[in-house]
Length: 355
Image 1 (cartoon, rainbow, N blue to C red):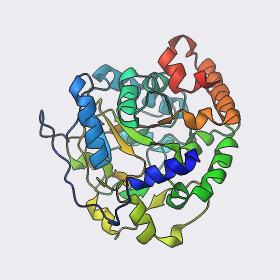
Image 2: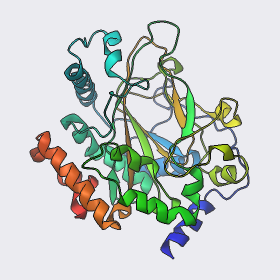
Image 3: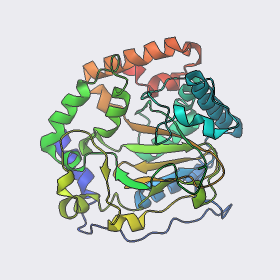
């Protein structure tokens, strides 16, 4: 019964029959016109303003989440991982990084990544506050994903492709009949034996679970479109249900967690916008928002970290999954020697207090 009520409430938010949102230009920041509008949670009034913006646009940017020193710590550790994989990696020469990076800029052969700087980020009070201000509860859990390094292209040919997509199976997300199968798949994830489980959990979502948000922690300035990075369709969370009923490409329908990619000529593609971001800021969006990325065509490296947050109840109600997930995290914390650095907030948002 509770699931049915949640489904109805979640879909009610996007019950209009409009399948394409009206164009809403992303406002510029009042403090610096090079950047898109952002909020600072150290200012008490900005919390409510950010939530209002998020409800309207489906995303929100928070500035001053990380300091310059904290950003550089993350980038230094990214390069250190590449050097562990290949001794020929030169921090000053991005072209030497290519053998260690996937086509999309994540480290090859890695899914869930556990390193001390990343763990410090995932328990960072400013980042967690950004999530809780939008999800509407302090009882949340965060994901354990990878990072992204987008090298400047050596020529006019981009190294990545522009894309717009959803990180959910839109058909299964909305239908009550799929709730059981989604819960079964999540419960069967083997975090100890399959590192891919940390990625698989990100896309297997049902609307009855509550508000799921995705985010990118931005580590280098992105003052213009040449630097590439996140793009999204403002307001598409509100037209999601109608889009699914009337416009979704049925040929893409399949079972299980997927990424749903829009075709290049889809009308929603023309509505995707590129927000500009300060280093140390985080952009957070509702998982129903169409989003993606554009290639880095600047002369600078783009460095960013994806992370997701969701209500802890999703884990709390699954005894076996919460135990296995927590045990796997505990082992990783011990492996990297993070025990003394783990904070009470970290224990909470890693899901360790649930067992």
